[in-house]
Image (cartoon, rainbow, N blue to C red; front, top):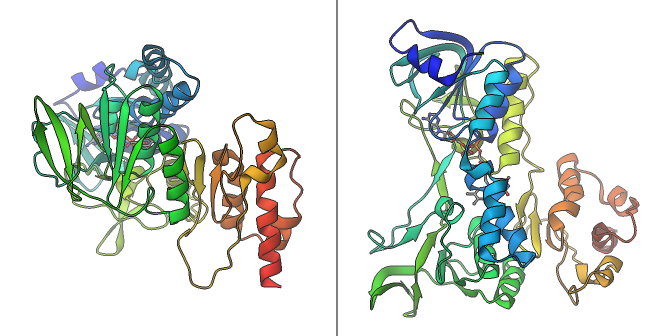
Length: 430
Ligand SMILES: Cc1cc2nc3c(=O)[nH]c(=O)nc-3n(C[C@H](O)[C@H](O)[C@H](O)COP(=O)(O)OP(=O)(O)OC[C@H]3O[C@@H](n4cnc5c(N)ncnc54)[C@H](O)[C@@H]3O)c2cc1C
């Protein structure tokens, strides 16, 4: 087992030769490294934290703050729980795990220097297989006056000890909606601004509209169909001027308007085929793969993991295509949102829906009353992130509605909500 330090001291000497080198140890890269280390010599290159964003500054702390807010924890307790859950943003344990598996860990920003060649600092690594898993970074929106204003990215919002009195969230995708709910629940005054007509613009309007209702009930000032014009001074403070002439004063402005691939030096773009091979002029570059957000295919940890398994299989000689048809798009708000497939298609589809509030389970839970959601290819309702999984499998396996409708679900679970909609679909196609 080599330590990071010993490796770095090797700089300037002979190149390090391994079978596989992985750039970026996020969800995708770390899984590739760990799986392939069982079969050969593996080195990883990591610019910040071994483990990437998810455990330290993305999925895990975001879910932690949401759950703490729902449990009614005060801010300082919520921060303590968040920091414990995200290992205090310290990757010692994750790095040790890799070293114990015999993986060489190199610290620094890796660059691609030629076929099968990677450099980090003055260390050169040669490998038959190079896997790029360098993730993504938040896009800074083109809003006048941002420079010098107290802005946050999601990383700041998930690692700070500061609870802003007034938080404006710009962008209502999954990240914006989750952080708006979390901060409102933890005592900030929150406004959420979305240029398109509804929250979660990629999903059907009814999903975004029901979520907006829920966030408004929690005190969030939801503004849809209006863009940000400029950040302006407001007395001693700041305000976000909107295109409709209104303005929202803030102490912090959270920029949640999307992410772009984080390309390592030596790579101008990443386009992958179904085996996650990087394509140049339409043809796979021998020995070069990419996984995770950098591929721009699907920005989820579970997608990065699916791509990682695809690369591992390909490298070990039993390749199979990645299949994204059943990839869930979950948002962990309350109610949770769970979408799969093309939820906005209108041509050639039969639709059915059902109010989750009508199932027996809803009558057992305090606070669930009236229509709380519906089933389409999208689900919205309590714990939809769990019970929607059966529909993701159904979409991926192209299961017939008849089988799905006659499948027996335990009583009283939320999953019973899918039956009435399936029954209506059967009737509609008869
Ligand atoms: C607030 C938030 C909440 C989220 N919640 C969820 C969720 O609940 N569920 C879900 O599935 N997804 C969620 N996501 C998305 C998820 O975090 C990403 O899809 C996932 O982390 C992508 O993993 P990755 O493999 O692309 O690597 P990343 O986690 O992006 O890590 C990439 C790594 O590469 C390193 N790196 C970059 N450039 C170089 C270089 N040149 N050399 C060496 N290393 C380099 C970086 O330092 C980083 O450690 C969330 C995202 C955010 C922002």
